[in-house]
Amino acid sequence: MEVIQVSNVTKSFKIYKERASTLKERILGRRNKAEVFTALDNVSLTISKGETVGLLGRNGSGKSTLLKLLTGILYPDRGTIDVEGKVSSLLELGAGFHPDFTGRENIYMNAAILGLNKKEIKAKLNDIITFSELKDYIENPVRNYSSGMYMRLAFSVAIMVEPDILLIDEVLAVGDTAFQQKCMDQLLKLKSNGTTIVFVSHDLGAMEKLCDRVVWINNSKVVDDGSPRRVIDKYLTYLSEEENKRLIEEDMVIEPDSSVPIDELEVEEKNETANRWGNRDVEITDVIFTDGQNNKKLGFLSGERMHIKLKFRAKKNIENPVFGVSIVTINNIHCYGTNTSIDQFVVKDLKQSDQGEMEFVVPSLDLVSGTYLVSVAVHDINGNQYDYHDKKYSFKVSSTINDVGIVKLKHIWRFREI
Image (cartoon, rainbow, N blue to C red; front, side, top):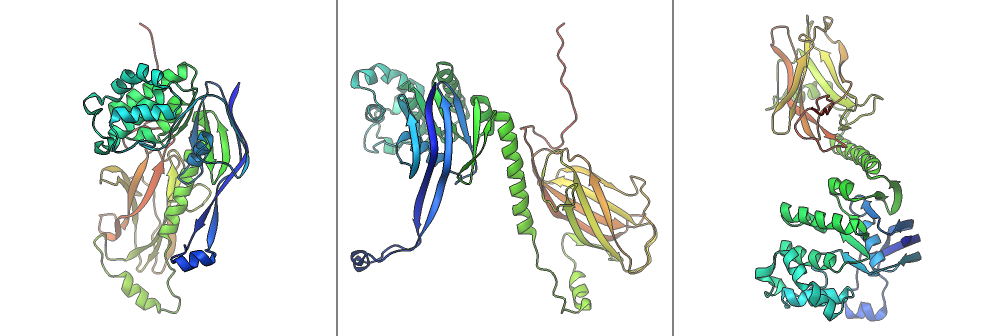
């Protein structure tokens, strides 16, 4: 049985750049410039009784707007929404609370708004207070409550009214770990009792644990709808690609002006910095990160192929040059370091003015999520530096699983009964 039906819903908002600043402008009706922001664009969705559905997406994608449409706070510009059953919503902390009323008075007021009569509220009052863990503060005005206390009271009222449909928007991010787990346990209990739950959160672990389905909304449209693990993995891959685009845009630099004499550019390049040294007999002129298809990247998914390309030029005849790469975490813990000499990779002798590219290939980037710094170097066989770039470069790793540490160890699990 379908208890929520969203059919071809569109919702837009006008965003005014300028507002009438004087009474004369308002009386004359001077038109102010406005942009139309489409929060939801032709969205359709059905949710069955007892189903728990997660709404996933970046900030501004339209998730919260959809929840407000389901509660009736907002109305669609086009399309229809049908909701069957008693709805309880937790969209904003303390929404509907009066700051001058006590916690007890706000319970009565909030529960009445959610459809309970006075007798029903009295029957549930002690359960609400006990769950909120606010017995010692329940007679205090809620203006004196912390944000965590607000959340406890609001959440307790919302779930204790035993709704047919419960709508939740990100409020579980507030409160201590013990209370968050208590809330999750209560949600699982409601779910087992047949309550329909629509859940918005950036906590992907909680979403996977709680939800039967996940709906991914992006740029006001439904992009995907299906099993939590599959949709979350697809979403994380998208986030990794978007992060890579952002990092590349930030890393873009203005190309040297061809009108500037080469000698002047070389003088600038010879200025020593704190994270670069060496005699520059061989000079690393550029370091580029790419994937296996030669696409420039600075954001990778764990397990993805990574290439680090070191472009160089020789200013003298050089025998047996050695190229090296080192990777460390953002807090300076070494992950891995090697060079062509250690790996017994022979680099041919260089002649003056030779230019080339040394490529360091990682077939599977088995690191956990995080930001990593890279050092590159070229030196002679005895370790005398030609050009050393100390932690001058960085890349980010995203992962579809929540493992911890630095490196991903290849492993399997086995279970035996003895």
